[in-house]
Length: 189
Image (cartoon, rainbow, N blue to C red; front, side):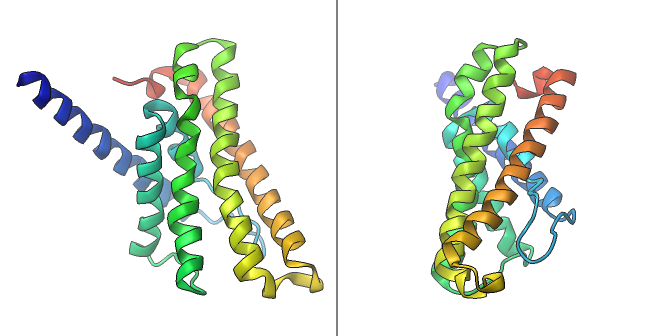
């Protein structure tokens, strides 16, 4: 019985921790990094990727979903249609949690050069998974607003590709720096 209570309280703590990381991601999202109408560096990827590396895929996906939902609570939703909102805020932000796919490899290689490799791989997995869905939404829903008469697929690929790449680079650099300063922040306590 005691073991069940401990396991349940552990899951609650992991969930609360995920909500805190999602809230931090939302706070970082308020820092202006948008250039023009479509290019942005998403600083919220930093805490969400860190959480997914620390806790794994399922908690990472849940925290990503919470981050997406927080956009509604804070009025940070660009709305064209219900399906566009579902793709860009629920699906795309949830997919950041896929960074946790390599959490076991990352944790197993703690404080080695291999840990940095897994950290960067996790960043790119989460970023590609998220920005793929923004790309899809860009083609389907935002294509009519493409600049210079550009084909919607090309415009979405360029804008989401550049934003995703810039986000991944910044996230990888910041997380590598944090990991170097305090690797225990990434460990399950």
